[in-house]
Amino acid sequence: MRRLAAATLLFAALAGPSMAQQSAFGLDMHDAPVAVPDMRFTGSDGLSRGLGEYRGRYVLLNVWATWCAPCREELPSLDALQRDVGGPTFEVVALSTDTGRRVAVERLFAEVSVDTLDPMIDDTGAVMRDLGVFALPTTLLIDPNGQEIGRLTGPADWNSPEAVAFFATLTDP
Image 1 (cartoon, one colour):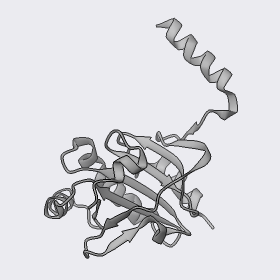
Image 2 (cartoon, helix red, strand yellow; image 1 turned 60 degrees about the vertical axis):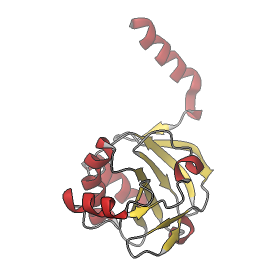
Image 3 (spheres, helix red, strand yellow; image 1 turned 180 degrees about the vertical axis):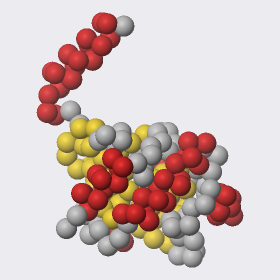
């Protein structure tokens, strides 16, 4: 166990400043922005949207599914983050991978009391592949230029004091 800890410390020391920084709530911030494709998804109104429509603001893009227990658990905190911090410079986008299952997505939103977020659905089934998502939930932080600047694989408490402070500072004009 000591060898593993020592190896981890040595790796971190050797990696130096090129290693991505991690926020207090687990979001890994990239050293350099990463291009994100302008994929399409559908809102609750049935209209197609693309990530390009969010240019000019930060987007916390959460990729999830109704069958994913950790996804279900974190949805209320994403909803609260949008309610507390969302606005003209920041938006939470909850993107379900449940292709063709809008009724199940809307039922889950009602069940877990998510009422601020618009349930978006990937109707193409391509989002996970296009974004390099290998586990759910996965959340990307996208900058106002449409580039990924952070990522977290796994659940988080998105409405924790640390997360709210981070996003409030990030979006403060």
